[in-house]
Image (cartoon, rainbow, N blue to C red; front, top):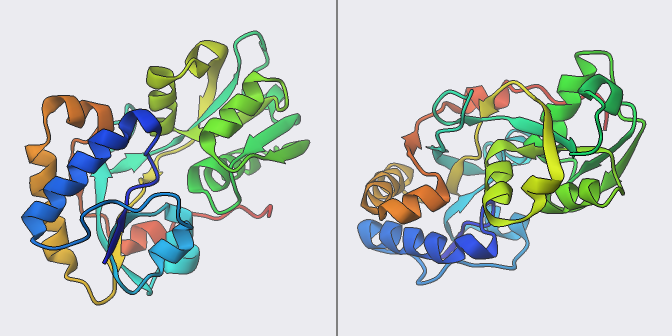
Length: 243
């Protein structure tokens, strides 16, 4: 058995994620004692012994649909988004006065091309306005994309709205960067399990665990509840034409 909560697991949040998983495991009655960290996410997501993990909307609709089960989608209570949804926030340096249409033709930092919030949503947003980045820089992570902008190696980036809130709370990047725009909301990062697992039982355990979290941990993780979003809603999110 294996479990991983690596999508929002910066060092400041790891103890809270550990306590969250312990609550899930206790309510479920089985599962690994500890969360797996520092493993390849694809090895985790496609592991036939996967008990619980979180993936991203674009990997789900392009590679994982039909190979894993949806457990549910966490509601992070994000401003401007329906429950269980999130969006991308475009960021630029505080001392760069250009608006998004002007930034759009310069250097764009992104984590990877299978990221919904770091690549797909922002590129679809720009394409819908007849825009595309003049050049790109691949960083490997949202925090690294933000850092690339702060250091002047890129002019703008797109971060998922929850990561942006966490970076502002737990790093200095919020003082270096400003918001330059947002994308339309899409379903947030879903919890998944392997095909042979009891997804409804896991969902019940997750819901109960969220309710049992301390107020401090619930606020740290921004968890407000678990939402049932049909897989069709994930599959209908558009992919960018630019690859």
